[in-house]
Length: 290
View (cartoon, one colour):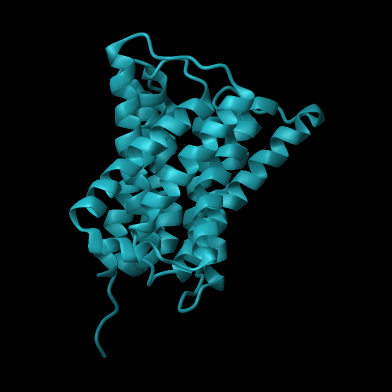
C-alpha cells in the first residue's frame, strides 16, 4: 500500500516536469489567467467522477480546516510564486521557492509515526545541490532591492511544504476534495486576473492544446496524485524526489530543442538521483525478519 501510494505520488513529480515545456508552448497568456483556465480544466475529471458517482458528493463534506488547507496550499502557492516572479529575478526567486522539498523532508519529523534520519537529510541536500546547478546555471545575485520578491518566494516554499505536511494528517479525507480545491483556485485566480492583468487569448491551436495539457496533467492530475501520495506514501522520499522535477524539466526542454545539454545537467542528474536513492533507502531495503 505504501509503495503503491509513493509511486502514485511520484507520478505528480513526473507531470510537473512537463510544466515548463507546456507553459512555453502555451503562448503569452498572463499567469493568473492561465492559472484560472488550467485549474478549471484540472477540476473537470473530478467533476465527471462526481456526476457518474453522485454518492461521492458526500466525501466533499469536510471540516473547514481541510478546505482552508487545500485552497491556501494550491492558490496560496501560485499567488505567492507569481508575486515573487513579478518582484524579483526568476532565477533567485525560483531557487528560494524550491526550498519546499527540503522543508518537507525536515518537517516530516514532526508527523506522527515518522522519524527523520541522516540519509533523508543527506538526500535532500544532494537534491538541493542538483537543483542549484540547474536553476542557477547563469549565476546568482541576490540584491536587497528585490526583498519583497525574495520574501514572497520564501513564503511560497513554506506554503507548499506546510500544505503537503498538513495534508498528511488528513489521511482519512478522500482525494475527491482536490476537485473542490481546483475549482476554488480557478475562481480566485480569475479574480486576480480581472484585477491585475490584461486578458490575452491564444493565437494558435497548438497553444490551446498546450493549455489543455497543462490543465489535465501538471496543473490537474498531478495534484490528485500528490494528495494521495503524501497521505499514504513515503513523504520523505517524495520530498527528496521532488528535486527531480527541475532536472527532468530541463531534460524535456533539451529533448524538444528549447535548451542545450551541458555538464551541469549531467552532474545535476547524478546528484538528484543519488539523493533520491538515499532517501528511498527505507523503502528499497526492507529490514530482515528477526
